[in-house]
Image (cartoon, rainbow, N blue to C red; front, side):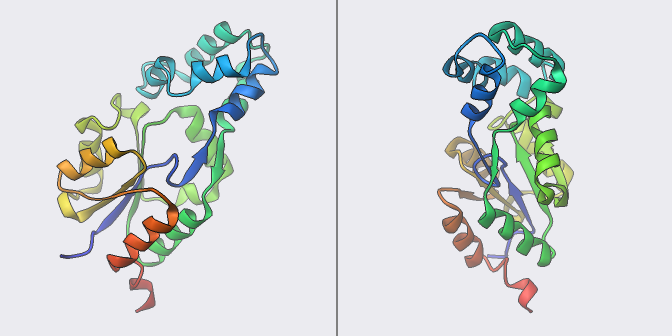
Length: 207
């Protein structure tokens, strides 16, 4: 079996970890409801889904949160508080650097939103080094819907086993496997790196 030609990374829990309670506590400090209530509002909620499907602008999302939480501040104050939920996963960032050295194109493929992407771009220099980005909010469709996977194939001009896809959610990995992609369900960075090593993708920069 030939090695994949590109590597497609999910973002949250694959390249960066996240904790919505960080944002909930920060927003609650400027509002009228508890961090727990705010977490329910913004963490994998119907409101967040609408936002990550691109059905709301950044400021429309802010206005919804402001009304629900009594947030006492403007959009410019809210944006960094909402975005500051991420922390680096150094082994995966190093893996990406090694793949780059090997000359392998890499892509970010994520259900996410504009405020999160803007914060990650500002905070994590490695994020600017991918060949392309496929975000749910820009295409109006979310994983595991086939439509977003088709965007990856169209942008990368690869299909089937030419694509290696890494994600932490079984349903998203299953949707990639159904298209013939090579897939890794991320359980830990160490296991992911071991699997990629078996495929020979990290050897090219040693030749």
